[in-house]
Image (cartoon, rainbow, N blue to C red; front, side, top):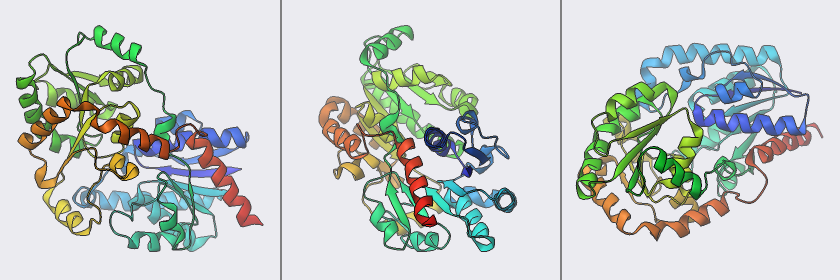
Length: 381
């Protein structure tokens, strides 16, 4: 069995690697080709080009790279057709992946699977209709998504969210890590301004100002900033003069897990990191902004009153958000201080979220692999 996979960013790389591991469990002689990151390469696929070329987001961010992305779309579609795999699985990154799928479908009847349903419940519901023209099967991370996909003719399986299968540090490991970096019993604040260059540079000054206010109120508080390798130098430079004597973590999963377990509170950009925090029962404040042009467009399309997955999955509004015009340092600081004084208010919503995302069941990667195989069998009947 040959599988062509395409992932365009680090979160997709994680999903792809877990799916590949699941497929290897169920089909030991499976062969992988395509585009992915280091985790997928570790599972046995050599990426055709660096995945980092696809890691862009937002309308204004994509436009300058459009020609290069268009070339990669054509090149990738040609590779799919040449490889003639049993299935093509695209993972998130819809601006790239669905354009590849469109070309592939124009020249073949290859089965196409997309991993991560588009958030049509949030905005641009027409995406599901367009997607159904080139995608046969969707693997959903959130339990309320299948009906939206099935309504337009695609098969859709909820396979669980990968966060429920991720390894977590225990309290003892968290306490040991605190001691090792000199934090001990001081209040510890995780600062998570994102994993993309544009969002980090945009949010870092606001986070810095907000954290200064919090540290002024709690002078012994320490700040911990986990980041990714391609941003490490920039993050160290941006945070060098932050209050709270920041500890930057990079390329050390044990330290990151320990920090998430040990933190008293987190200030985070909007995204799946809210689920990582919820898995560790770490209280959080979500803050996010984008460039003015993208903000104006998305604001007019948004159909929901919260973008935080913990709030959406738990059907609460337990996690406070400061988005767009509200992403201001003084508002963020006030909210952080409030959550620090009432840290347990979010715990119930976090536990509901983890249960609904599949905690206690089969690993999502294995569930996703089984769903892919079931879809292929159903097609061949």
